[in-house]
Length: 441
Image (cartoon, rainbow, N blue to C red):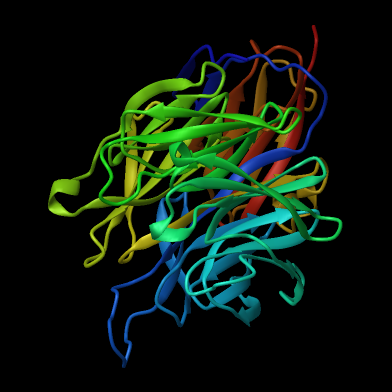
């Protein structure tokens, strides 16, 4: 699919030309970006600074804080549907990300990373824990289902592939080699640990790509500027370490065969097909020589964006929003020590979105359409933004505060390839998704 061109004309409409192929699919969109700010580290009580949770709306570019977790540090955020799970030092907390109400919480210790597997919440553990470095929780109420015994040290990222769960075993700050724990989720027992050796020291994040498991191995403190990515083949149980002549930090995510990860205090990319560095600097070092660092990052594969939290652990920081090629888009303020971030992507099943209460106040016609698609809203409703998506959910265009003639908006669609499209309308009363068909002449 290709966006050909976009023209505005005085009749308060525009021409959008692109082709659509395939059958109707759920429409996906990014609702918000969630950040957990750890606050200032305080050595002794009474503690006055705690973890704060904030949301960023990519449509309006507004930031708001919605809750606090009364502990000192945040480790991880995992979003599933309209629910967010937060690992924060001594607590795992579950929030409804529509109402921002706390749904459940459980006290714990040594929390690190979160993952989901077959409806279970998996939690990796680190110091001060000395045994059971992975726990399995019930996602409904966060009650304990199982503890995994036998892991030999502090653990990081978790990933599932087929009928196996994998966990990064780094051994903590004194670890001298990286290991991969292999767990049977039927019994939640450790089957074995594969020792990747000193070439995978600092093993941290795990990803699955083309039936292989990839680990991002962070460069330990005080070690020369060298890190690695390890490739593990579950079918053969073989592995190899790709040594990188860079200081490697945490992974960000995968998009179209590229693994985004920290390189030399910035963010670069690693080609998973050629197994080599693709780009050394997409997001540059924000100022590590003056103690300003990238604290956390996330990838929006739907809209093609990187969200990179920057800070110095002492004063409020900011999140830099760039394209996947590193072009700056915008930024927004965060709190102190924004140590965890996640993109909240939603999917509207076809037909469900039309049940919105504001639906009857937004009309489009004719449908099927051949030339001009007209949008009409009730007098007390205003459109704040709108976009058109392909049936795959891919965002094709987004307009903030589109021009109008009264309460009417016009879209010229005469050059669209015949087929199904979705018009997503953001109004002062809510969000509406309207399917429309471009007819064949």
